[in-house]
Image (tube, rainbow, N blue to C red; front, side, top):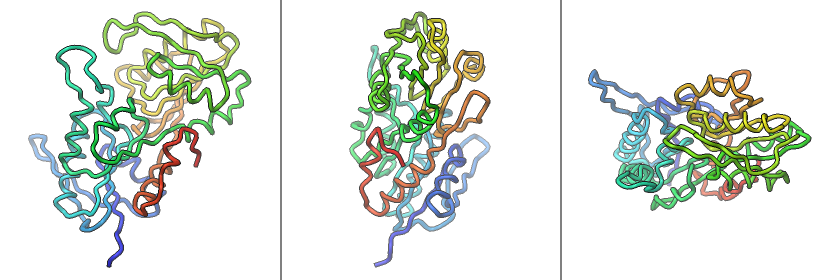
Length: 314
C-alpha cells in the first residue's frame, strides 16, 4: 500500500504564513492557481495531484469575505480531486465574534461559517485562539484549538519585569488573562467597559491596583484598538510604571495603527495569523513552527493534546 503524502496549499491572503509553515515542516508549498474573471469571480486550481493525500489548506478568514469563499472553493476542489483527508488550517477564524444571539433578529455568523466549511467537505479544522471556545461545538468534526501562549510567555519571561501584573481590557477576556496570571504567578487587573454601540467605548473602570505595576494587557483580537488603548492610558494615569499588551489576532481596522502608536502602550506583541508589519512599537511573533508541528502530528496520527494546554512551550 502506497504511503500517504502531505500536500500543503495556501490561499492568497495567507501565503506569507503558509510559506513559513511549509519551510518549517520541511517541504515546498504546493502550487495552486487562482483564476480571476472580469466580474470578480475566481476559481482555484491545484497544479499537482492530491489524490489519496493528506491535504492541508492554510487560509485565515479575515476581511474581505473573499478569503473565506476562496477557502470554501479550495476545499470543494480538493474533495472533487479525491484527496484522502482535507484539513483546513485557519490561523484566524473570522466571524468568531458572532457566536450567539445577543439581541433580536441577528444571525449567528460563526455557526453559519462552520456549516459552510462542513458542507464544502472539510474533515478537520486547525485554528488558534478562537474568540469563543464554544465555537468548537458548532462543528461535528475534529477541531484542534491551539494557544498562542507558547509564543507570548517566553517573551514575557525575558522581559524580567519587576512588578509584572496581567490585565484584561474587558470582562469577557478575564479567563484568558487569569490563565496568564496563574501561570506567571502574578496579580490580575480587570477593566470594565460600557459601550453605546460597537467599536466605541463610552466609559471604563479599572478593578484592581495598578500603581507602581508593570502591566501586560492580554487580548485575543485588537480591532479598532479603542478598548486596549483607553485601558493603557487609564492605567498610566492611575500610576502604572508601564503598560504593554499582547494579542493573537491584529485585525487593526480603521485608524487602529495611529491609535496604538499615539497611546501610552510601551510595546504590543502580536502573531502573524494576520499579515502585519513590525514597527517601533509593534512586534510580530511567528506561529509557523506550531502549525508545522501540528500538521506533522496529524499526518502521522500522533497525539497533539500537548498543544491544547495553555502552558505548552515548544
